[in-house]
Image (cartoon, rainbow, N blue to C red):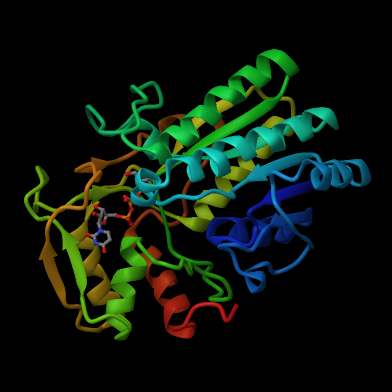
Length: 329
Ligand code: UFG
């Protein structure tokens, strides 16, 4: 049994992580400022309400508790917002992560799992994207994450930190129990918005452009179930805790589904009408984002259990239909 600090454990992916770690018998401490996350999403373990940039708080936490590994999910993640408010992104995603890493270094905590993003690649030259592809983010969100990736390599050289950087593609779905799920405000992600249109919470879904260079003209993405994503974190942590080397891996399923296909599958899963309206493209969207998942499969033995979007959407629909208003807090 290990002790994990889950930073951002009240958020969408963090809350699934906390549940999975507890389910495997680990001790979990969640640190979250609850600015975006939900208290009810944390199903157990210890909870500290606070800021990851608060060095005093982190110092007293690391002095009083032995932490084997830190998993860091707390970040701002809206591409459009990052263009309008770049400094908020550099401060929160980059600066505060540096502060967390400094507190870890000062207290000898040497294992770190970092939530990075496909946005570090920018507009890919080809798909599926390999980890060695050029990293040229097209927005401050991607740059705020890429800067941390570089800082991690520097911390390894200087202080011996061992880290795993996981570049998420499109996280989706919910825990099959229906107890926890995705609840962002505002919601910007495709699948929850489609399901809100299915449940009548929205009148329609806007398809952001149908003139892309893709088979049906709508953007293609690589959807990965949130529980497969958290499984990859557990494998990465076990790898580091058993003396493995630092690594950077894509976290996608290598599947390709278009916006129209997701809407069609959602119609079948929900049995509801879902009105779709084509609107202009959303600035900053690449036409295709599909991961090569070869590295994580080979190096960590990761095998996603939900490799088709129907099963992913079924779990998301269970959450949405049982919690039409999301969490109460
Ligand atoms: N989309 C719509 N209508 C909507 C919402 C989304 O057509 O109402 C489309 C988008 O244009 C995109 C696809 O659905 O083609 C998926 O969009 P999401 O907003 O769900 O997710 P993104 O692909 O934009 O986000 C992912 C990752 C981010 C990363 C980003 C980089 O989740 O972390 O790719 O482009 F920053």
